[in-house]
Length: 169
Ligand SMILES: [Zn+2]
Ligand SMILES: [Zn+2]
Image (cartoon, rainbow, N blue to C red; front, side, top):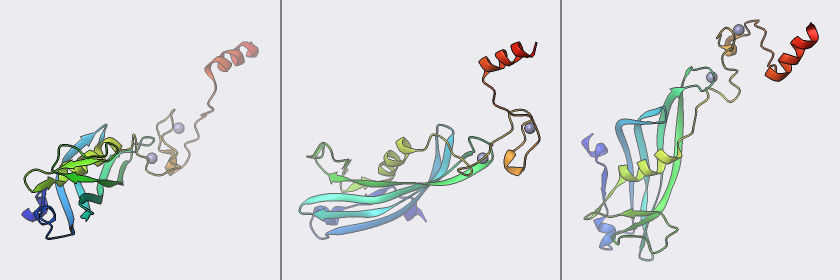
């Protein structure tokens, strides 16, 4: 199991030309939290390939988010996936400034750091338990997904509400 938690990936065989491609598939456990969303596991799988002397990393980083539904507050689990693509280089930067660049330290790259940098800035702002979640009744607080509560919930514009009162008198 320790092997799985190892965040580094040795690419010495690629640097020396002994291999053209190396694959990885890792699961990292931990505690991550950002903007009210949390997750405790990152999966990261992919390949580092030698493309005519340039080492390209492409893969998929995944985490399972948990957070309350933004409308009804029910706990939601959602899978979040980001594609990762960039150049692995022992130089200080990629030659192409538009390319994502992943540094090599010694003969290893830091897979967890790469997965985190792909996932964390791209998390959704909120989670919904389902696209058409009806949310909670603003009057009595009932979860409207479980049926209507019978409350009067006409959304009346405050300014128009004033006018309605005016005409009533
Ligand atoms: Zn909901
Ligand atoms: Zn209600």
